[in-house]
Each structure stands twice: as C-alpha cells, then as structure tokens.
Amino acid sequence: MGLNIIKEVAALGRMAIPALKQKYTEVFGEGPRSNNRQWLIRRIAWRLQANEEGGLAERARQKALELANDADLRMMAPRDGLALSGSALSSVRTLSNAESRRSALPPGTFLTRRYKGRLVEVMVAEDGFEYEGEHFKSLTAVANRITGAHWNGYHFFRLSKQEGDR
Image (tube, rainbow, N blue to C red; front, side):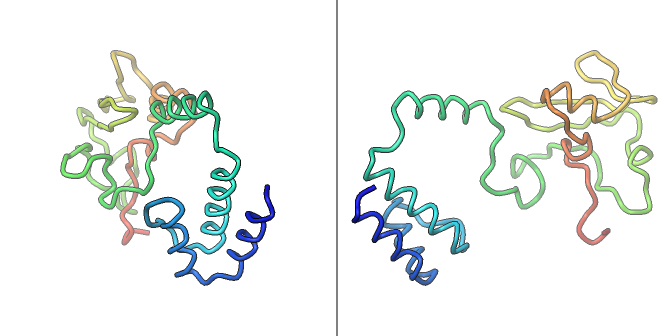
C-alpha cells in the first residue's frame, strides 16, 4: 500500500459522517446504505486499496458472481415480510400470542415461499406437512430438505408474531 493510500485512510478517521458519505459516493459512484461511521471508513478504505492495488482477479470475480447467483441474498428485509411485494406468498394468517403455532395452521393450508428463484409450496396435513409428495413431521424438517441447512421452519416460511403481539 502506497504512502498516499495510508494518508487517505488516516484522513478518513478524522472525517464526520456527512463527509464520509460524500467520499463513499465519490469512490463507489452511488450513495451508501448505512450511516455507520466504522462501516463507511472500512468500505472506503477497502475500495481505495482495491483501486490502488488492482482489485480482485477476474477468476475470483467470476466465482463471486457465480456464488451470488446461487444465493438467496437480500440487501434489506422486505417491509411487508413477503419475498415479493404485491404478491401474496403466504396463505396463513399471522400468529398471535394466544395461539399455538400448530393449532394456527389448519390442515389443508398451503404455505408458500419463493426460495432461490423458485416457488416452494408445502401443505399442512393432519399429522405434519407434505412437500413434493413426501410427509414430514415438522416444518423444520421441510426447511432442512429445501435448503440443505438447518432452519427453524416457522422462520423459513416467515410465520412469526406481529410486532404488537410481543
């Protein structure tokens, strides 16, 4: 890292947040999504160094793009709790404190969620859940089958309490 970059990074530590946001916009070509001072300093320093040193190799950049295409990433959580605004992705009402999660899901209800670009549909059965012709005892088992990782099934299908119910 050249002496010039070291001085610029040191100067970032003395800047106020509005100045950091302006510098971020200069360096990245778009406004920041955060007002966190430490995050802004780190991101700007990273970009300055990447510009000076040449950034990622093309092979690494391609691999990162490939991984990002396969991930279910989101910059910010949706405001209404649904994956796609304007479309009803869940046919289940929001649970209240007084209700048990299982009793709030009557048999025959379909739970839907968009995951990695495809629509996942699970039916609530009398004694569990059905997904792609298979029977599961819990929503967690269904979420595990869909993602290949451990998920709380109610969180995966976004079945949680409303803010006022807590």
